[in-house]
Length: 243
Ligand code: GLP
Figure (cartoon, rainbow, N blue to C red):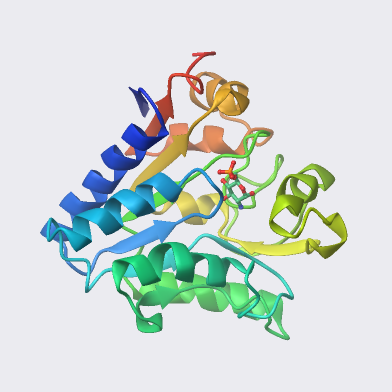
């Protein structure tokens, strides 16, 4: 069952999850942290970087695993998730590219790149803690509604809604938002030893309620967390409003 933790605000949620990551790294210095993009996880990365700077935790051996990526953007495009995670996670934690694992969104053979990423994760010993945000439609990573609950890393087509939501990162121009993405599957995500979903703001309240209290169903991908033996959902008061 899903453990729900209600915190006063996004900052408190970030601090709570960063402390869980720090505890993991103290126990296992080369732990694999699965990281998500979007605006929600930023307070987590800021709080973890602050702990590193103050000497509260040594993250120098941490390994970082990417959740999803656009197909076709050059790796050095500022909005490729590889670039975003470089700015938001690797640089602040003082980690180099060697610490990073992710799928190649520019590969000529995308299915092969997806399989290669699954193999990379397996060889790394799996993800220790996977951080997730949630889409307003309940998506996790880029697993849109009706994704198979057993899915592995694969190519997906974005819904119009998600492209509209993400246009804000592309000068507000939906034409610039790629149509295709590579995402860890729901089955891939569930293979992590601890899954932590952070949701903040009233816009996520319905998706959170459906995920935690609704039936386990592919129409709400995040409901699959109910199948995981160690899943934690951290919500602020606004996102908890429908619970
Ligand atoms: C994108 C990402 C998801 C993220 C979602 C929500 O679709 N692929 O991983 O959870 O956006 O973003 P935000 O946290 O900005 O609401």
